[in-house]
Length: 176
Image 1 (spheres, rainbow, N blue to C red):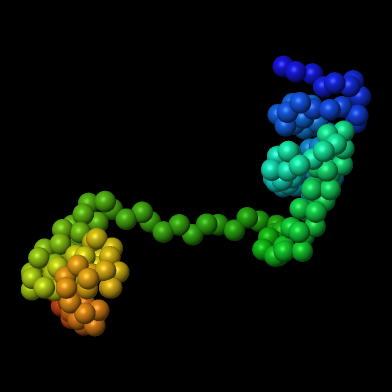
Image 2 (image 1 turned 180 degrees about the vertical axis):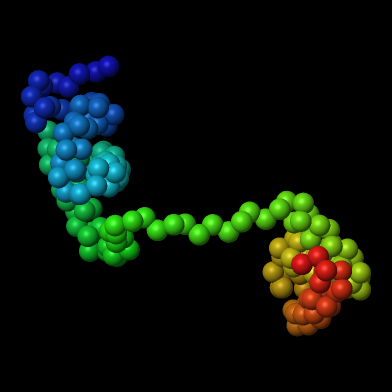
C-alpha cells in the first residue's frame, strides 16, 4: 500500500482515490453525519459525494484540497436533497400493521393458466394468433399487425372480439 507523501492529513497528496478514501473516510463520514439526522442517510450522502469526487479526480489539480472539495460536495448534495425533499415519513406511537394479502395457491394459479390456454385454443385461428402475439409474446399492436400482414385497426378489433369471447368462456368463469 502506498502512503501519502506528507504526514499531515490536511496537506497530504494521495496517489489514488482509493488511498484517499481509506485515509479520510472516517473523518468525512463524521462530517456527513453532522449534516443528516440518520446515520444511513449520512452514508448515502458520503457515497454520493465520493462518487462526484471520483468522477472529477483527474480534474482536481491540488490534491491537498481534497477534503474541502468533498465537504463542498457533501454540502451541495445535502442542500439539493433538502430542496427536493418530500414529507413522506411521519412519526407515530405504534407501527401500523401491514395488510398482507394471502398468497395465492400455486395449484389454483396453474388451474387458471391451463383453463386460459384451453380457452385461447378454442378461439378462431386469426384471433388466437393475435392474442398470442399481443399477450403471450408481448408484441405491440403495430408489431403484431406487421408480423401478420394486417392493419393495426384489424389487430385492435380482432383482439377486442377475442377478449370478449374469453370473458364469456364458461370454463374460465368456473376457474375464477
